[in-house]
Image (cartoon, rainbow, N blue to C red; front, side, top):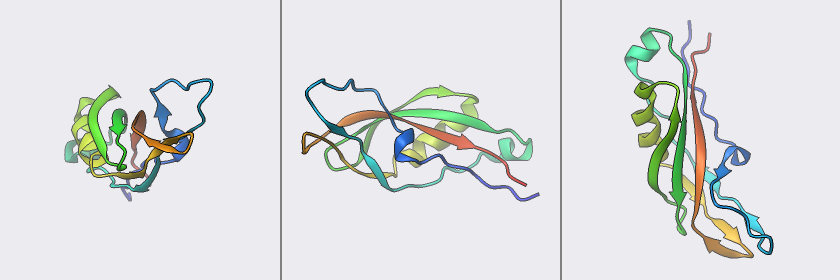
Length: 114
């Protein structure tokens, strides 16, 4: 059996936690560098899969800051997900052409594939 990790990284999968203003056009941040999380050995050995929703602030430079786990199907996946997301880099969000910080939630999915 081949074991691999599926990482959901679509820009459309980023869920903004900042409400849109009626008068402002928001362009969401776009990942330009992603890092796959390490699959915990015990979870891999036992065939356990999972999903972690990581909420973070993407700052004006496109760096990830203020990470928290919004939801995790298994706590063993939480730290690897946060560690990986902290290494990501984004094209920053823009509102009306100006670069702005924004909070987003990123789904990280851990799966085993044959």
